[in-house]
Length: 299
Ligand code: SF4
Ligand code: SF4
Image (cartoon, rainbow, N blue to C red):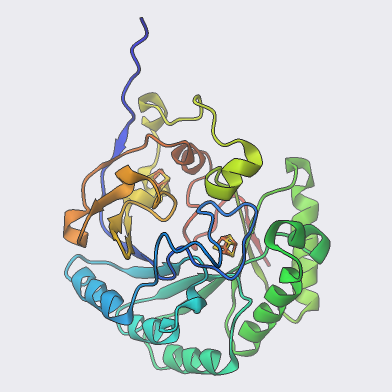
Protein backbone atom coordinates (compact mmCIF):
# COMPACT_ATOMS: atom_id res chain seq x y z
CA UNK A 1 0.00 0.00 0.00
CA UNK A 2 1.46 3.41 -0.92
CA UNK A 3 1.16 6.30 1.47
CA UNK A 4 0.94 9.68 -0.27
CA UNK A 5 2.81 12.40 1.59
CA UNK A 6 0.95 15.63 2.23
CA UNK A 7 2.03 18.67 0.20
CA UNK A 8 4.42 21.16 1.79
CA UNK A 9 2.90 24.38 3.09
CA UNK A 10 4.20 27.89 2.59
CA UNK A 11 3.53 30.39 5.37
CA UNK A 12 2.82 34.02 4.56
CA UNK A 13 6.16 35.52 5.58
CA UNK A 14 4.93 39.09 5.28
CA UNK A 15 2.16 40.66 3.24
CA UNK A 16 4.33 42.81 0.95
CA UNK A 17 2.25 42.70 -2.23
CA UNK A 18 -1.51 42.99 -2.54
CA UNK A 19 -3.16 41.97 -5.79
CA UNK A 20 -6.62 42.92 -7.03
CA UNK A 21 -8.59 40.82 -9.53
CA UNK A 22 -9.99 44.14 -10.60
CA UNK A 23 -11.69 43.01 -13.82
CA UNK A 24 -12.74 39.61 -12.52
CA UNK A 25 -12.67 37.11 -15.39
CA UNK A 26 -13.97 39.54 -17.99
CA UNK A 27 -11.71 40.29 -20.93
CA UNK A 28 -12.17 41.67 -24.43
CA UNK A 29 -9.90 38.86 -25.72
CA UNK A 30 -10.15 35.06 -25.54
CA UNK A 31 -6.55 33.88 -25.59
CA UNK A 32 -6.00 30.17 -26.13
CA UNK A 33 -3.51 29.94 -23.25
CA UNK A 34 -5.41 32.00 -20.63
CA UNK A 35 -4.99 30.17 -17.33
CA UNK A 36 -8.35 31.39 -16.01
CA UNK A 37 -10.23 31.22 -19.34
CA UNK A 38 -11.14 34.91 -19.34
CA UNK A 39 -13.42 36.12 -22.11
CA UNK A 40 -16.09 38.73 -22.87
CA UNK A 41 -18.67 36.29 -21.45
CA UNK A 42 -16.87 34.83 -18.42
CA UNK A 43 -18.37 36.62 -15.43
CA UNK A 44 -17.51 33.96 -12.86
CA UNK A 45 -15.57 36.74 -11.09
CA UNK A 46 -16.82 40.32 -11.43
CA UNK A 47 -15.33 43.81 -11.38
CA UNK A 48 -14.07 45.29 -8.13
CA UNK A 49 -15.56 48.70 -7.39
CA UNK A 50 -13.48 51.69 -6.38
CA UNK A 51 -15.17 51.52 -2.96
CA UNK A 52 -14.07 47.90 -2.45
CA UNK A 53 -10.52 48.65 -3.56
CA UNK A 54 -10.40 51.68 -1.28
CA UNK A 55 -11.57 49.55 1.68
CA UNK A 56 -8.82 46.98 1.03
CA UNK A 57 -6.19 49.68 0.55
CA UNK A 58 -7.09 51.11 3.95
CA UNK A 59 -7.01 47.62 5.44
CA UNK A 60 -3.57 47.00 3.88
CA UNK A 61 -1.77 49.96 5.45
CA UNK A 62 -1.48 48.65 9.02
CA UNK A 63 -0.51 45.26 7.59
CA UNK A 64 2.55 46.82 5.97
CA UNK A 65 1.74 46.19 2.29
CA UNK A 66 4.38 47.78 0.08
CA UNK A 67 3.10 47.36 -3.52
CA UNK A 68 -0.19 46.89 -5.32
CA UNK A 69 -0.93 44.85 -8.46
CA UNK A 70 -4.02 44.88 -10.69
CA UNK A 71 -5.04 42.08 -13.00
CA UNK A 72 -8.05 40.46 -14.67
CA UNK A 73 -9.32 39.78 -17.22
CA UNK A 74 -8.53 43.11 -18.79
CA UNK A 75 -8.32 45.73 -16.02
CA UNK A 76 -9.20 48.63 -18.32
CA UNK A 77 -12.65 47.15 -18.98
CA UNK A 78 -13.46 48.16 -15.40
CA UNK A 79 -15.11 51.59 -15.77
CA UNK A 80 -13.45 52.78 -12.54
CA UNK A 81 -9.95 51.59 -13.43
CA UNK A 82 -8.32 54.97 -13.94
CA UNK A 83 -9.75 56.27 -10.67
CA UNK A 84 -8.67 53.07 -8.90
CA UNK A 85 -5.07 53.53 -10.06
CA UNK A 86 -5.07 57.25 -9.19
CA UNK A 87 -6.33 56.38 -5.70
CA UNK A 88 -3.80 53.57 -5.25
CA UNK A 89 -0.93 55.94 -6.03
CA UNK A 90 -1.75 57.65 -2.71
CA UNK A 91 -0.88 54.37 -0.94
CA UNK A 92 2.08 52.88 -2.80
CA UNK A 93 3.56 51.80 -6.14
CA UNK A 94 1.04 50.23 -8.52
CA UNK A 95 1.44 47.80 -11.40
CA UNK A 96 -1.32 46.97 -13.86
CA UNK A 97 -1.29 43.89 -16.10
CA UNK A 98 -3.05 44.67 -19.36
CA UNK A 99 -3.37 43.39 -22.91
CA UNK A 100 -2.76 46.96 -24.10
CA UNK A 101 -5.62 46.98 -26.62
CA UNK A 102 -8.19 49.31 -25.06
CA UNK A 103 -6.32 52.43 -23.87
CA UNK A 104 -7.89 55.82 -24.36
CA UNK A 105 -5.82 58.97 -24.70
CA UNK A 106 -7.50 60.78 -21.81
CA UNK A 107 -7.00 57.80 -19.47
CA UNK A 108 -3.26 57.86 -20.10
CA UNK A 109 -3.18 61.64 -19.66
CA UNK A 110 -4.81 61.28 -16.25
CA UNK A 111 -2.52 58.43 -15.23
CA UNK A 112 0.58 60.32 -16.36
CA UNK A 113 -0.51 63.30 -14.23
CA UNK A 114 -1.36 61.07 -11.25
CA UNK A 115 2.06 59.42 -11.34
CA UNK A 116 3.82 62.80 -11.72
CA UNK A 117 2.01 64.02 -8.58
CA UNK A 118 2.67 60.82 -6.60
CA UNK A 119 5.69 59.68 -4.57
CA UNK A 120 5.08 56.27 -6.10
CA UNK A 121 5.53 54.72 -9.53
CA UNK A 122 2.95 53.32 -11.91
CA UNK A 123 4.08 50.33 -13.98
CA UNK A 124 2.33 48.73 -16.94
CA UNK A 125 2.84 45.13 -17.98
CA UNK A 126 1.60 44.51 -21.51
CA UNK A 127 1.06 40.93 -22.67
CA UNK A 128 2.20 40.18 -26.21
CA UNK A 129 3.01 36.58 -27.07
CA UNK A 130 5.09 36.89 -30.22
CA UNK A 131 7.25 39.37 -32.11
CA UNK A 132 4.88 39.47 -35.10
CA UNK A 133 1.23 39.06 -35.98
CA UNK A 134 2.11 35.59 -37.32
CA UNK A 135 3.51 34.44 -33.97
CA UNK A 136 1.16 36.33 -31.61
CA UNK A 137 -2.25 36.30 -33.24
CA UNK A 138 -2.81 32.52 -33.38
CA UNK A 139 -2.64 32.58 -29.56
CA UNK A 140 -4.23 35.94 -28.67
CA UNK A 141 -6.61 36.51 -31.59
CA UNK A 142 -6.58 38.14 -34.99
CA UNK A 143 -5.36 41.72 -35.03
CA UNK A 144 -4.18 41.66 -31.41
CA UNK A 145 -0.48 42.09 -32.23
CA UNK A 146 -1.04 45.40 -34.00
CA UNK A 147 -3.49 46.61 -31.36
CA UNK A 148 -1.16 45.75 -28.47
CA UNK A 149 1.83 47.33 -30.22
CA UNK A 150 -0.19 50.51 -30.69
CA UNK A 151 -0.89 50.36 -26.95
CA UNK A 152 2.84 50.09 -26.24
CA UNK A 153 3.49 53.08 -28.51
CA UNK A 154 0.84 55.09 -26.62
CA UNK A 155 2.41 54.22 -23.27
CA UNK A 156 5.88 55.16 -24.48
CA UNK A 157 4.56 58.49 -25.81
CA UNK A 158 3.22 59.21 -22.32
CA UNK A 159 6.61 58.47 -20.77
CA UNK A 160 5.84 55.00 -19.39
CA UNK A 161 8.30 52.13 -19.85
CA UNK A 162 6.01 49.09 -20.07
CA UNK A 163 7.26 45.61 -19.24
CA UNK A 164 6.33 43.45 -22.21
CA UNK A 165 5.43 39.97 -20.99
CA UNK A 166 5.37 37.02 -23.33
CA UNK A 167 4.28 33.49 -22.52
CA UNK A 168 6.82 30.97 -23.73
CA UNK A 169 5.04 28.98 -26.43
CA UNK A 170 8.14 28.26 -28.52
CA UNK A 171 10.79 25.51 -28.14
CA UNK A 172 13.65 26.29 -25.73
CA UNK A 173 16.23 26.28 -28.51
CA UNK A 174 14.47 29.24 -30.17
CA UNK A 175 14.51 31.39 -27.03
CA UNK A 176 17.46 33.67 -27.84
CA UNK A 177 16.27 34.28 -31.40
CA UNK A 178 12.74 35.08 -30.19
CA UNK A 179 14.08 37.52 -27.59
CA UNK A 180 16.35 39.26 -30.12
CA UNK A 181 13.53 39.65 -32.63
CA UNK A 182 11.13 40.87 -29.95
CA UNK A 183 13.56 43.56 -28.81
CA UNK A 184 14.26 44.64 -32.39
CA UNK A 185 10.55 44.99 -33.22
CA UNK A 186 9.90 47.02 -30.06
CA UNK A 187 12.82 49.31 -30.87
CA UNK A 188 11.52 49.78 -34.41
CA UNK A 189 8.23 50.90 -32.86
CA UNK A 190 10.04 53.63 -30.92
CA UNK A 191 10.53 51.81 -27.61
CA UNK A 192 14.28 52.34 -27.52
CA UNK A 193 15.09 50.51 -24.27
CA UNK A 194 12.42 47.80 -24.10
CA UNK A 195 11.82 45.69 -21.02
CA UNK A 196 10.87 42.12 -21.84
CA UNK A 197 9.87 39.34 -19.46
CA UNK A 198 9.39 35.79 -20.72
CA UNK A 199 7.01 33.72 -18.62
CA UNK A 200 6.19 30.03 -18.52
CA UNK A 201 2.63 29.07 -19.39
CA UNK A 202 0.41 27.78 -16.60
CA UNK A 203 -1.45 24.62 -17.59
CA UNK A 204 -4.81 25.69 -16.15
CA UNK A 205 -8.01 27.04 -17.71
CA UNK A 206 -7.84 27.36 -21.50
CA UNK A 207 -4.16 26.31 -21.43
CA UNK A 208 -5.13 23.05 -19.72
CA UNK A 209 -7.34 22.21 -22.71
CA UNK A 210 -4.57 23.22 -25.15
CA UNK A 211 -1.88 21.13 -23.42
CA UNK A 212 -3.70 18.43 -21.38
CA UNK A 213 -2.69 20.06 -18.11
CA UNK A 214 -0.37 18.86 -15.36
CA UNK A 215 0.64 15.26 -14.85
CA UNK A 216 0.05 13.82 -11.36
CA UNK A 217 3.83 13.69 -10.95
CA UNK A 218 4.16 17.46 -11.46
CA UNK A 219 3.72 18.41 -7.82
CA UNK A 220 5.90 20.11 -5.23
CA UNK A 221 7.12 17.71 -2.51
CA UNK A 222 8.45 18.31 0.99
CA UNK A 223 11.96 17.38 -0.18
CA UNK A 224 11.91 19.90 -3.02
CA UNK A 225 11.25 22.76 -0.62
CA UNK A 226 14.23 21.99 1.62
CA UNK A 227 16.92 24.55 0.73
CA UNK A 228 14.41 26.35 -1.53
CA UNK A 229 14.05 30.12 -1.26
CA UNK A 230 10.32 30.55 -0.46
CA UNK A 231 10.45 34.23 -1.39
CA UNK A 232 10.46 33.08 -5.02
CA UNK A 233 6.81 32.08 -4.58
CA UNK A 234 4.12 34.76 -4.81
CA UNK A 235 2.14 33.11 -1.99
CA UNK A 236 5.08 33.72 0.37
CA UNK A 237 4.44 37.48 0.41
CA UNK A 238 1.12 38.18 -1.41
CA UNK A 239 -2.61 37.69 -1.37
CA UNK A 240 -5.27 38.65 -3.95
CA UNK A 241 -8.64 40.35 -3.49
CA UNK A 242 -11.51 39.27 -5.75
CA UNK A 243 -15.19 40.13 -5.64
CA UNK A 244 -15.62 36.88 -3.69
CA UNK A 245 -13.05 37.33 -0.95
CA UNK A 246 -9.32 37.05 -0.46
CA UNK A 247 -7.44 34.24 -2.17
CA UNK A 248 -3.93 32.89 -1.94
CA UNK A 249 -2.52 34.03 -5.30
CA UNK A 250 -3.52 35.32 -8.76
CA UNK A 251 -2.95 31.90 -10.33
CA UNK A 252 -5.37 29.77 -8.33
CA UNK A 253 -8.43 31.98 -7.81
CA UNK A 254 -10.74 29.39 -9.35
CA UNK A 255 -9.63 26.63 -6.97
CA UNK A 256 -11.99 26.22 -4.00
CA UNK A 257 -9.12 25.81 -1.48
CA UNK A 258 -7.51 29.07 -2.66
CA UNK A 259 -10.15 31.27 -1.02
CA UNK A 260 -8.76 32.00 2.43
CA UNK A 261 -11.23 34.47 3.92
CA UNK A 262 -13.36 37.58 3.65
CA UNK A 263 -10.69 40.02 4.72
CA UNK A 264 -6.91 40.37 4.50
CA UNK A 265 -6.45 39.59 8.17
CA UNK A 266 -8.42 36.35 7.71
CA UNK A 267 -6.23 35.28 4.79
CA UNK A 268 -2.86 34.80 6.46
CA UNK A 269 -2.89 31.02 6.87
CA UNK A 270 -0.06 28.93 5.41
CA UNK A 271 -1.05 27.39 2.08
CA UNK A 272 -0.44 23.78 0.93
CA UNK A 273 1.25 23.67 -2.48
CA UNK A 274 -1.02 20.90 -3.75
CA UNK A 275 -1.60 22.16 -7.31
CA UNK A 276 0.21 21.51 -10.56
CA UNK A 277 0.65 25.27 -11.02
CA UNK A 278 2.69 25.31 -7.79
CA UNK A 279 5.16 23.07 -9.61
CA UNK A 280 5.55 25.74 -12.32
CA UNK A 281 6.12 28.40 -9.65
CA UNK A 282 8.73 26.14 -8.06
CA UNK A 283 10.47 25.58 -11.38
CA UNK A 284 10.56 29.17 -12.56
CA UNK A 285 10.08 31.41 -9.50
CA UNK A 286 9.09 35.09 -9.43
CA UNK A 287 6.65 34.62 -12.30
CA UNK A 288 4.13 37.17 -11.04
CA UNK A 289 6.56 39.89 -9.95
CA UNK A 290 8.05 42.80 -11.86
CA UNK A 291 11.49 41.62 -10.80
CA UNK A 292 13.83 40.15 -13.34
CA UNK A 293 14.03 36.40 -13.60
CA UNK A 294 16.47 34.26 -15.52
CA UNK A 295 14.07 34.43 -18.43
CA UNK A 296 13.89 38.23 -18.45
CA UNK A 297 15.78 40.39 -20.87
CA UNK A 298 16.00 44.12 -21.25
CA UNK A 299 18.45 46.42 -22.91
S1 SF4 B 1 -4.51 35.98 -21.26
FE1 SF4 B 1 -4.97 38.07 -20.58
S2 SF4 B 1 -5.66 39.11 -22.44
FE2 SF4 B 1 -5.80 36.92 -22.85
S3 SF4 B 1 -7.92 36.29 -22.32
FE3 SF4 B 1 -6.63 35.97 -20.49
S4 SF4 B 1 -6.82 37.86 -19.32
FE4 SF4 B 1 -7.51 38.32 -21.41
S1 SF4 C 1 0.35 28.58 -7.69
FE1 SF4 C 1 2.32 29.50 -7.09
S2 SF4 C 1 1.82 31.33 -5.96
FE2 SF4 C 1 -0.05 30.08 -6.06
S3 SF4 C 1 -0.07 28.82 -4.17
FE3 SF4 C 1 0.97 27.62 -5.75
S4 SF4 C 1 3.17 28.12 -5.51
FE4 SF4 C 1 2.00 29.67 -4.44
